[in-house]
Image 1 (cartoon, rainbow, N blue to C red):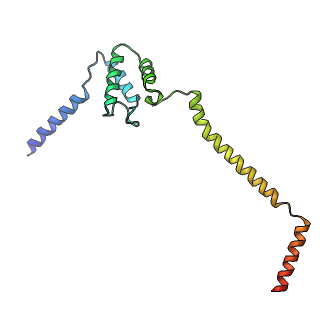
Image 2: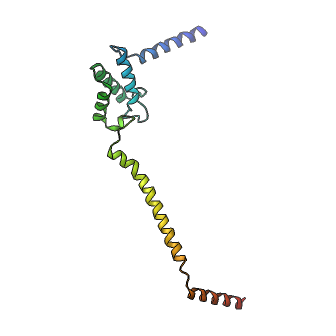
Length: 152
């Protein structure tokens, strides 16, 4: 039984090794660049997985395209630019800072500041309204208290 288990384990481990090394590279630099790029690029279908870890068909297509671009002599920036042109900034885990991304970061903070200012102004207005206690109000209160004491 132990021998059968060892044989099965060996067969499965060989098949995993074969699946991982299905890409052929011309040099170690190409392989390193390929691994770097596939770890940096996001799978458009899986969203929170890079294309190296994703099992989606589109991720396989992207890995093949990255390999093709790397073997064609493109550097890292050229490959990333190609992917961004084709799939948008979503495909890259580190999107560049653009006026639109700045707006996305600043807008929620602006809403928080505006809400805080609105609350402060409302509180100040209500406090000012409460502070306007007149002599007539004082006499009306005194009359009500006297009326209450008489009835009690």
